[in-house]
Image (cartoon, rainbow, N blue to C red; front, side, top):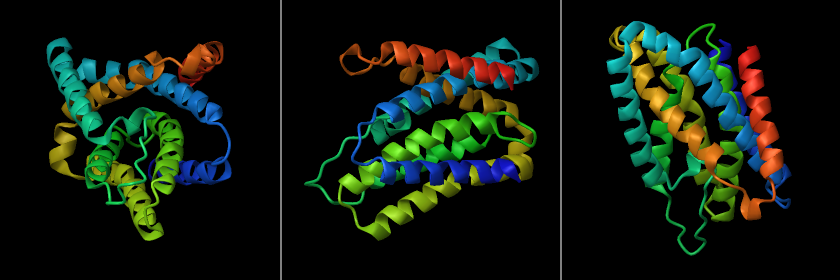
Length: 224
């Protein structure tokens, strides 16, 4: 049950942080994003990748990881990089961002696929979603969309990861090919996490803090 609840809880925490800190600097959110990126990357390498490699072997694993990287590149182009902390507000354009909405829902759905019962990947997704939900909520509010649109966006976005988890655990077709699917998702996670980690802070002011939280993220993932 927690595999379904935790991703939803992460969105709720991220939304709450967005409203509490909306008039403050985003330093804490950026550091949390770096921590989550390191944690997600470490869990992917420590937990998910060895399992997939064991079942598929090197060549097929590598092929589907590359496909995942390419897929995430396309999704990132459509969403303009919200998955790793970029959000560009255009207050003059109040049209509902359908392309952003669809690409983020696809991304969120795919994140739920490798989450199984007693699987530590749910914690990586949890920590990844909190800063993303914070930044996404801030973007939606600053863009002056209607409250009903913002609420609908966040509710559907919130539901996509548990939906992916449910399908991966209950649909025979998906469970039969789950290792191929997981290899695809590994590519997505690698793309997102490395993009977060290798982007520098504004004016290089937070590099030391960023390095420390990255080390903490890797250490925590190793201890799980």
